[in-house]
Image 1 (cartoon, rainbow, N blue to C red):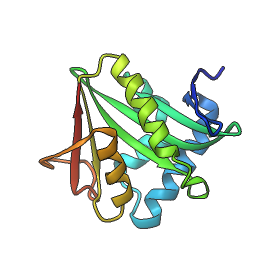
Image 2: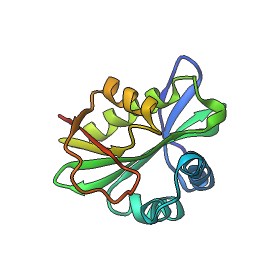
Image 3: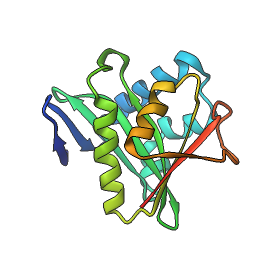
Image 4: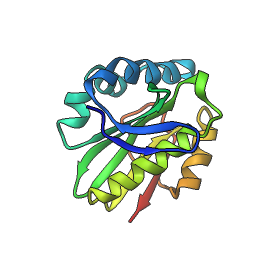
Amino acid sequence: MIMELKETETGIRIVEYTAEHRTRFKEINVQWITRLYELEEEDKKTVDDPEGYVLRNGGKIYIALHNNYPVGTCAYLNMGDNVYEMIKMAVDEKFRGLSIGRKIGEVSIQKIKELGAKKIILFSNTEGSAVAISMYRKLGFTEVPLGVSEFIRANIKMEMNF
């Protein structure tokens, strides 16, 4: 059973991930990653086993549905101490321009905050993901020192504190 979180004015629904979303979760994320980058080990862990890698450890995955078809994803790793890492935020290329990324971001951030999050961090790339970086800023993220990242492609770290 899909738990509906929010229906938007354009008919986009944001729902919690279920096993029936597994194939599209992987397809959507592999699509955007491999367009500019190589699939890294950390990517493979997430897209090959979202239930075990994300959900089993207290993380969450949200799916954007367009006419009941999964077109966007946003996942959160539970890092402990009420800190979550936003990962695998992506929208199928065929459905970009409908504000799906912003919508799934807004809804999922609110849900993570309701779970007791005190901070959300994310890693991204300023060149290949410039549009995403702009959206993250609009959602309330600010840039912080990069530090250590599991991703070779990461050249920016952002966070949001509650």
